[in-house]
Length: 332
Ligand SMILES: NC(=O)c1ccc[n+]([C@@H]2O[C@H](COP(=O)([O-])OP(=O)(O)OC[C@H]3O[C@@H](n4cnc5c(N)ncnc54)[C@H](OP(=O)(O)O)[C@@H]3O)[C@@H](O)[C@H]2O)c1
Image (cartoon, rainbow, N blue to C red):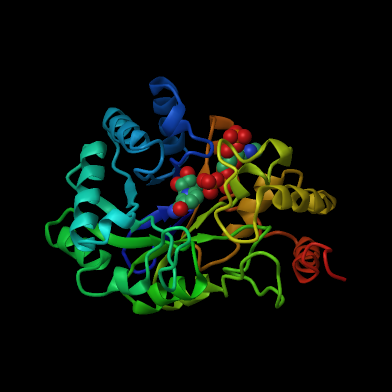
């Protein structure tokens, strides 16, 4: 396992992180014995970064992870998240503190290394799906104020957020310089957070926000590297329990169709789509760690094997560039 710095936090994190979310879902739905076995296996292979949230199984992931880490007795870099909804708007800072405290209680910890906002970001409030504006995060009485109170109490080391929602709002949080890391949607089907894509690219263009964040000294945590399991040998069976689109223009059926178009990677010696996907994400030096949602130990092995592997061959990258430039062949 190779390690990288999480931005300027001083935290040294494994290139592969253990995603404790719903997709894969070991820490949500697995038996206690399987969870202990998987975490021991991951630690043995050098994984030291674990990402959870209350939203994963309504608190189950945090509860299970805390219990398992107590049992294995090793110190890891631990991150969790708070998802604030409309009922938090009356006193956002207080809601952030209270949700974070509940998370710490489920984890059975006095503190965590990284507390992240899990709410999607919007430029302004409208009648659509709930999201928080940059002002509600950064302004007086906002999320950040709550996070700072927690840091002052020694309950949180650093602050992060989820880079999902509207791009301008994500960029506003990055540019604020107030956050130490963010979670970036970055994969072979939508690489726009870290690669140029043509105007009109049908998936949301994140405008190379990874580079922008790294320029601020932020850590970058990649999510959805396997497009929730679609980037697997059998794309149709990916997607785990949720096929909800996380990112505009990346709906499940389109992702499956596009994953099939990546079959050409085999001609360049890349036998496994998951390995190609993880190696691709790790090629970007601005990335600190790549989270994978595991459902078994073989998947941990496969992801870990990517750390320290060669970058994708030039011809494979040229083929990928052609895919992105042509919007996966949808435009000539
Ligand atoms: N902040 C946020 O809003 C947010 C959003 C998404 C994710 N995350 C974080 O990122 C983590 C990663 O999860 P993700 O949702 O992004 O999913 P992902 O890692 O893109 O995909 C996980 C899925 O890939 C499959 N998989 C894993 N390794 C495989 C392999 N070697 N071969 C074939 N299939 C493989 C598993 O499939 P099977 O179930 O078929 O075995 C699993 O369901 C989460 O656990 C969470 O920590 C955060």
